[in-house]
Length: 448
Image 1 (spheres, helix red, strand yellow):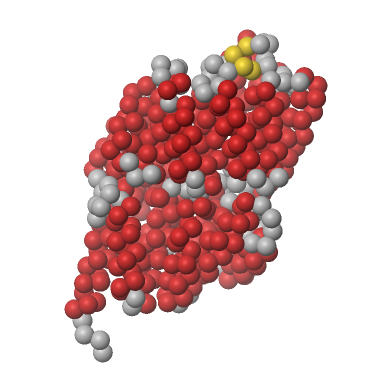
Image 2 (cartoon, one colour):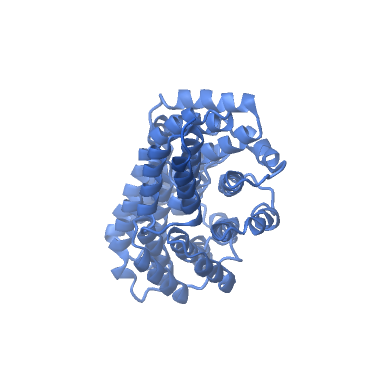
């Protein structure tokens, strides 16, 4: 049996197809546009390669789109049929199991299958990255870190070590180890110059520790790490926009929105999340964004019944509420109420914190700031479980804080701000500083 670039067994017997498979692995790790091209070539040449079909299914589920769920279901059927025809290795069978677990509403079961592979093959960078990616969707920062640290030693001197260091950097950042995250991410970039994930992990560090100049320089001086990417490159531009926002350069932020973040009007939920969160942040800073919400809401209206990822749904709701799409907002709320009663790990996230957060977004848009603060505050303790990063979820933190300020709940808001500062290594960014100033002003003004 052949072994791939991960030093793990793969049931391909054609060196040309193995080259394509290895190309897929490297492209996937680098968030490259060539991932589906390489995978398509493998499946065309190896119709009984079950792991290839499982990869197609798992990658489709990661996209968080209802129509791609059907693609994943079909891929799962093809994978099972391929296993029946060829047997496959233990690694291959566990990939097929992972896809089946997720399709049955248990993405944690998919993680368990990947971890079982890694117990036998700790050099399997591909399985490690998939475990990392699914945990990211579930908001499991602690699990992400434990998983990647279990395979660090096995990757010492490995061809793909840089990508693992990039993953480690991100998990360190998400668990508050900012100095270690910065060091790991920069070392990873030395070994894997095209590792956009590792570069973005270091950008996260600079965002969380209020060092915008460092982050802007990092992104501008390492274009080769991310300009080859699929839509992940828009996310890197998003990070650059956040860093400029922290410097108060709001005109630059709006320019980046128009020329880069929404240069292509896609409806990928990650792109919609980038866009809606930037517009919301700008509006909280008093910037008029004109009719930009309408373009996003047009896409979001078609996603009210997706129900794949709560993180995506809440960003769709941002677009809908700010564009005044009342009927679509009602449809989203109705679907949340139904989904919250269904079995499955994602439905549990709709129930808590999804429903409270959704109510809070709607109340904020309607100017019911007391209700918005109550609902968003109720959602805060479990918001990490919707997935994404601290930086991505910070838009909801900012809305919570501003809702509380507008409702006059200065003491409660101060507690939220202090908690936010504590999670940012005690640093006070521009947002926190301006809101603390607002609280000080409110306390100096006698009640009328």
